[in-house]
Amino acid sequence: MTLSGRVAFVTGASQGIGRACALTLAHAGAAVALSARNQDKLNAVAKEIAAAAGVALCCPLDVGEEEQIKSAIKTALSHFGKIDILVNNAGITHDQLLMRMKRTDWDSVLNTNLTSAYLCTQQVVGSMLKQRWGRIINITSVFGQMGQAGQANYAAAKAGLIGLTMAIAREVASRHITCNAVAPGFIDTAMTSVLSDEFRQNALKVIPLGRIGTPEDVAQAVCFLASEEASYITGHVLNVNGGMLMG
Image (cartoon, rainbow, N blue to C red):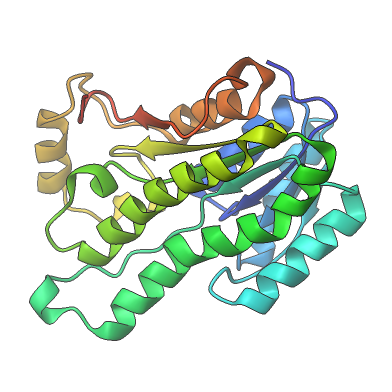
């Protein structure tokens, strides 16, 4: 798979799955616009890409702020002239049982994990429509498919991403733009590193492949969906969960 000549915009690119996606897309030949809140971490990812003879641009932003999204994407479009691939990866958690969950925790998770994907897609789709080619890839979650106690906000946002993916796929298919989702299972990231050993061991019991996934496992799936080889796939949810959820 080659993405030579393509430009990708990745949210949440400073660490974890987003960082892995940025590095993998760059390795495949794409120029990458890196976005996240932490400028220093973005700079580190950009240096990694440059060291491997890739091209990267740092576009720091908080995806919870609409004007920052508009400004960052405008900067990327001005710099590269287009955006071919959008990876909506940015996400947060504020876990709590539903009866104790504060409205602010609900709103912040929905805003960051779901609304930002709508806003980012809205800003880049014009470039894709003009050139009649594009790849929109939303990072959802196995918990958006099966639910999770204590994560009503997170599960709702990730389930919403699946619906958003299918709606967008139908809207833009006639212009040779695909929109797909990748649904990771239990992945070894900073978000999951805070979980107890007991939780991790219990998680392993329900993963048939018997291991926790890596950010690179997810990134390879994203890279495939961004490629020409996936040109006849749209509106699809690609599970990357070690068999944790099947069907």
